[in-house]
Image (cartoon, rainbow, N blue to C red; front, side, top):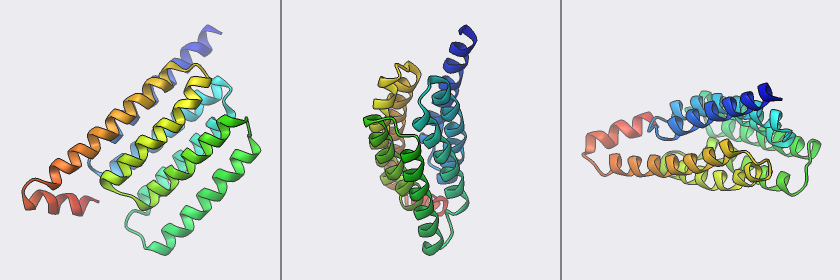
Length: 184
């Protein structure tokens, strides 16, 4: 039992750190890669907590995020096909691992995150992650996971910081705006 509790806390803190670092970045690819790794840690954390819908959707999130990093510069048709596939997978997993009201909020969060990952960039992407964090907070509360509560709060703050820093870069000199556009 003590070993399991230690592992729950360790995976939660590791995922928290990765989420905060990722959302504070202005590079879209780095944001997605680090968020994908965090998704794997969250999956293990939720599995250890017995939150099976959250664990499964965290794995979908990790795959979705990694896929989005690879398709950032691809055409609209490919992104749409991948978005639809991940949305269908999310809905199927939510139905298969149904755990009541909590599953509804997690499913909404996952679909919103899927949309944001494939279609939004910059500030809009960070703002959507703020909403996603609020929806995931219910899972953290229900599972009495202080790491996830802290992670959702920290992720929200990091998303706000990321949105602010992107605004600051865009409002700075024209060459900085051009560099930001090229990275997105």
